[in-house]
Structures are given as structure tokens and as C-alpha cells.
Image 1 (cartoon, one colour):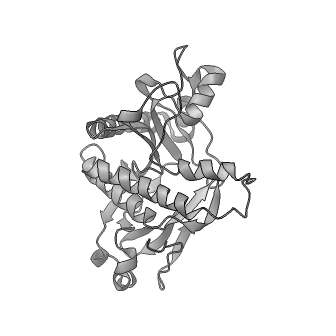
Image 2 (cartoon, rainbow, N blue to C red):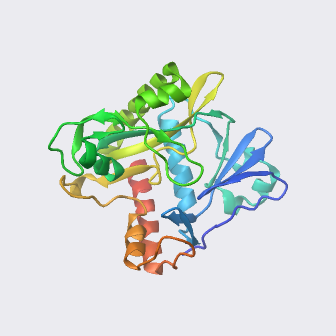
Length: 292
């Protein structure tokens, strides 16, 4: 197993932010997004990473940006280190595949979530109120049910802690009615196209979240797109409504951590090497199947 890259080091470039996964640097022609192999659970970054995870996230985002470009422009300018500052070129062996040169955008402070199935926090909210983010749903639905129509269930974009659900009316109050409609309609269109493509590859796209930014008044897809970090993917062959599903994401590690009795506060326990390998394998499998 190759070693995980936990910290992006690019001397001479100004680091603008450090997220749970991505380090963002200033570049002459835009921004550099470097997806590390850092791994978090329950909002805590673990001391170990998942080797190669940042490459999967970046290359899968690039795949979707290009595939969906006819529906929506995106912020990606290049994945080629030759188009990036010299320090990246000098360290291309470490940063190739996990570094993306992107356009600067005016980010819209809304997480645009689309749900085609009832799972996760949506399922929990439905049980309490028979609705999700103000969208009323029929009685009698069960966990993992497919919805009659995908629904737009936006949230806040929290820099720390958890995102909070928003109704469509609350989004309109925050960003204006016209932009709220554009965000909703474009999110639903992109989800429909991606879900149809995934279905043809034996994969269910249960839900996903998008981030958008404005450039010259035009909405662009930003951040990441349709990765296992931002989306819930299920295997069509094993899907069965009425229960939780096995997702192509880090749930294996979350379940293992729950069993350790960890209080979900720093410091976190070390992951078992077998769990690291299982998570790495799941990320690589969903990328391979979608790009096949």
C-alpha cells in the first residue's frame, strides 16, 4: 500500500485554506485545489489517511465536470501539472491526479442537495415530519424508498460543524428568488443526468450535493462533483428498500469507529489497517465502475 499524503506542501504558493480533505492555494491563473488523503469521521480528522483517496476524488470530479459540461459550465481549468506553477511541476509525481487548477468564482453559500431516495438525514426527518426541508412526502414510505420525483433539499454551507436544512423559501431569502430557482432547477437537471448515467452502469445515485459559484453572472459547478464524499452511491444488484444500504463511501470506517466506543472527540483511535484497505477499495471500485 502506498503512503497517504496528509498535507500538501507547495513552497512559494500562498495557502488560502485547509479543509478536511482539500488544501487551496493561490495560483497566478486561478486557484489550486489539492485533494489530500486526509480522512475524517464525525467531524474529526483522523491521524491516518486513506492512500490514493484524494486522487479518486479529484479524477472522478474531473470526469463528471467534463461529462456534464453541456448542462452546466464548471470551474476546472486543467488537471495537467504542466499548466500549473513550477513547484507543482517539480513535484508532479506526488501531486498529479490530485491537483486541479480552477477558475475563481463567487461561491453561492448554499449546499444544493438533491435526493432521489429516502436515506440518511432525509429518512430521519421524514419519520418526524413526513417532509424533508419543507418538501412534503406521501405517508407510508420506508427507508431507502425511491421517491416519485427527485427533490431539492438545500442546506447551509457551514465552515465548522454541521450544515443545517433550509426550505426553498429560506434559500430565496438568502440569495434572491431568481438565483434560488436557478440553483434548484440546475441541481435537479444535473442529478437526473448523472443518475441515468450511473444506472446504466449498475449504480444507484441515491442523493448528492452540489456547490455552485458565479462567473460573469453564470452559474458554474464548483468544489467537487458526484464523488463518494458528496454522494450516496448504491449497488443496483444489492439494493432493497426498507433497510439501510451499503454505500460506496467511508461508512465502513464510521461503523468500525462506532464499535470502538470512541466518544467522537479528539483524539480519535487509529483505524485498523484492514479497515483502511476496505475503504480504499470501495472508493476505487465506484470510480472504476462509473468510468468504465
